[in-house]
Image (cartoon, rainbow, N blue to C red):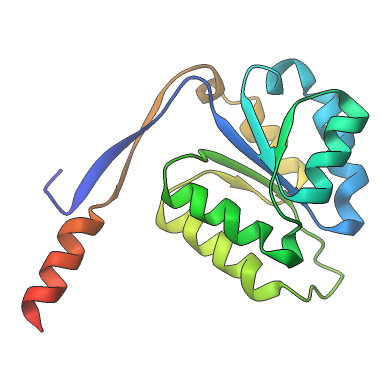
Length: 156
């Protein structure tokens, strides 16, 4: 592939962000319990309340960031940009308006930009967590942002 893209490698041990809107917290906790044997082999992080509840109810260690409405979604997005989050499980509630909806959209967008797998419901999370890629490295192509910035700056 030409220099417009660079190869990123998601390691065998993934850094997985766990996020859930209030109406989906029970569902993500149950999902984590069902997949505990897989999740315990990875580094887990999440937004504040979700991370705390998963740890309290499953015993899985989950590093907590701020609550979503207090910037937690943006913190997770920043970790994606830094290459410190490889995979996102975000059980969003499509039937409830969210006060931090712009933050949620920004997180979804940055996951797409950095080609990060993201599950926004249980079915997708089930497919991803049982994928053969969970036990091995995965290489993917991401836009070469440094080249992109240099090209844009030189054209102005």
